Image 1 (tube, rainbow, N blue to C red):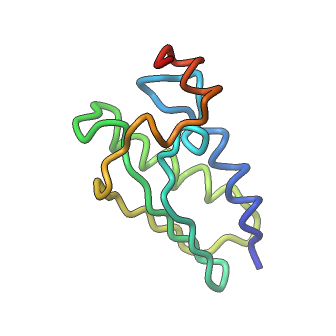
Image 2 (tube, helix red, strand yellow; image 1 turned 45 degrees about the horizontal axis):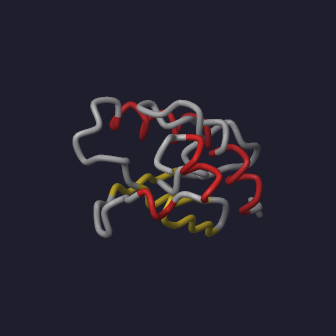
Length: 100
């Protein structure tokens, strides 16, 4: 069985393309991770619906997760409900990005 912490660690290797100093997990772009029979479904968003690198980021998530041993199918679902906001960031990351 694939461990959720392994999936999270792998996702932390991917940086938000518009703000490449914070990974997509710390950025709050990952809304849900569901693992069933080694198949992984990720529900994620972009920092903006008009992110020019967004669909490349989806492909990167798929490719990165397929590096995990024994992983089955990988599905990435995009959602913009709720839309991403800086409230999903920790205070430390808000400072790092200049929001505070």
